[in-house]
Amino acid sequence: MSNRYFFTIKFLPAQADCALLAGRCIKTLHGFMAVNDAVANKVGICFPKWNERNIGSAIGFVCYDETTLTGLSYQPYFTLMRSEGLFEVSTVKTVPETAPEVRFVRNQTIDKSFLDSKRRRLRRAEKRALEAGRDFTPASEEERTFLPFHSIPMGSKSSGRDFVLQVQVEGEESPRDGGYNMYGLATNVDWRGTVPLIEL
Image (cartoon, rainbow, N blue to C red; front, side, top):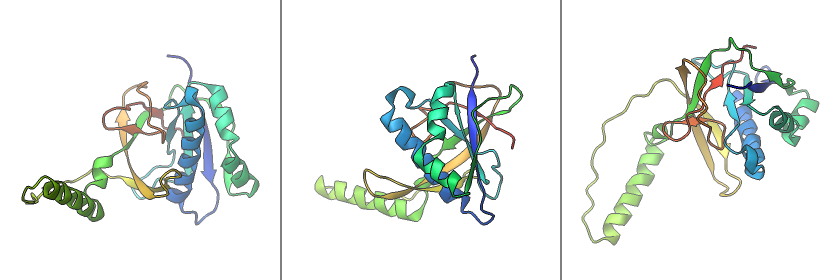
């Protein structure tokens, strides 16, 4: 397997809302990939300081193409936050061979367990039943339990709606080149790429 590269961003304010800042960094990545078809689904993200309480005060970007990461690291949002003294943006470096592999997964099943989501799905199901002339009888669902996860607030430029990325971490034995979604995350099914857990 060829070399992978990475750069990291440390969130410098002591009382920073790290999930919010991570969301803005992910939005920057999303926009970068949306206008650069050649790099779409090829940049993964990692959270070097991930812990049980929160995502930590840093985010990393990983890719097999060094030039892609250099371009990403100079996006206007990152440059502004660096010049304001809010971000410390590293140079692009080669991933150490000793870095453990993990997968940061967007788990949309978690979203479905929240009350607002359940209400929306019930309203849609009721509407479909009424339009089809059937009685609507909602089935009760079993409560699900999930491994620990963290929530990252996001906003969609195209729809204008806010949403949340529910992210979990999984260990992996070796690098897997399964690609990433447009937020740099693996998913439960389609995108299964791993990233190194970079030490800071």
